[in-house]
Structures are given as structure tokens and as C-alpha cells.
Image (tube, rainbow, N blue to C red; front, top):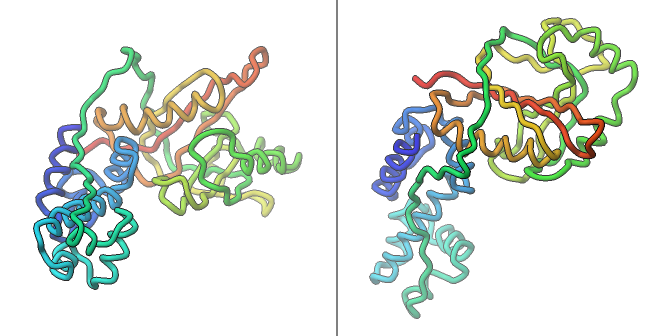
Length: 288
């Protein structure tokens, strides 16, 4: 996957003045748009659209230094008006396009290059499981997207669950893992930025379809799951494992992520404060 990513980076740089739609890029990469954008974000720390915008404005800066007119440069890199280009350039660089021409000020954003870095020789434990169509039933709410630390809104959600809801979830639960799971889906920023909200559900897995109005339900189609056990300080170990799944395991595996809710469960160690065993379940499919 690293080799393919670098080929895509070359393709983007060769077509900065063209329409670089996500569909075109993912087709060139040979994987789904959803999978490619996820991998790109976790490896680079920015979204694909942010990278393309930065590269276009960096090359625009070079063209302005060569004396090209602002209007011509704006059109060259896909901006429909000089005002739109000027606003984007000012936000990106901190100065106006005219400052580049008049005073020779400059800002650059170099082309990315991905490499594989092996840290500490630590292998990731995982297993692959197949599951038929099932439902996650439980209690859900919209919560802020948060990459690190304890999400206070999820804590409040957990505390809001009534005994009646707990009893109904327990009676419906009939699929492994036989645990209370945390599932996240429908993120405003598609899980690519720490902004906006997502839907978080605390619930159980079941094949039952009939539930009361006291619980929410999300249906997950039959698919393959990559499961990542982890143990250590909570929540940092769980969050670090999740980051490694996207930045290390997926790029080098034969699988790509699909658009479906991922989930996890956590069992706390009674003898160690803030220490837990967790499993992360990621929906995947074999690469074509």
C-alpha cells in the first residue's frame, strides 16, 4: 500500500491543474474512496482535500514568483474567481498573492513521500472473523468527535442508561462478543477531523429485530471483521491501537476498511486503576 500511496502522490502532482475528484484518485489507487481517505489521513495527519489544496497553492506561489498574473494563476488551479483564490491564498500563506509579485514573499508546501517505519519490532495481534447480518441495540446520542482522552459526553451517556434498558439489552444479546460494546458512526467529518459530532451507541449485538421504544437500533450487514485485542492504561492504549490500525496495519494488509460502524468493548482490571483489556472490531473486506 505504501508503494501505491506514493504512486498516487505522483499522480496528484502531475495533475494539480486538473479536476482531482476523490473518485478519480481512489480509482487510480485501486481501492475504495473511503478506505483511501482514511489511510491517507492517518499516515499524513491531514485530509486528502487539504493536501491537494496545499499543493495547488504552493505551486501557485511558484507561478506568481515567476511573474504570472494572479487571474491566470487562479484559473490554472481551478478557482472560478480571483476573489476566491485571493481568500484561499491569504488563509493558507498569511499574505496576498499581490505580495508575492510585489515583494517576492513566498511559502511552500512540499510534495509528500510515504515510507515504512518499524518502531521497536512490536507486532500487532489481530484475528479475522466473519459475521452474518446483525443489529447493535442500545442507547445512543450525538457526541463531539474526540481523538484523545475521555469523552465526557460518552461518560454521561453511559450514566444515563436505566436498569430497564440494561435488562432489555441483556435479554436481546445473543452474539459474540457477549459484551457491552461502544459503536461510533455517522460522523460529521467522516472520522477524518477532530470536529463536529458523531453518533455513539452503547449496546449489545443481537440477531433480534423486535425491540422496544426504549432502545435504539443500527443494522450492520454481513461482513468480515478485523479484531485487535489490546491491554494497558485506558483510554490511551485503546486509542493508540486504533491509530496503529489505520497507520500501520491497514496500509500493509490485504484488507481495506468498508463503510460500516466499528465497535469496541472494554473490561476494566479491578486491581489496577484505569487499566483495561479491550478489543477493537473494524469492518473490512479483501482488496480486489
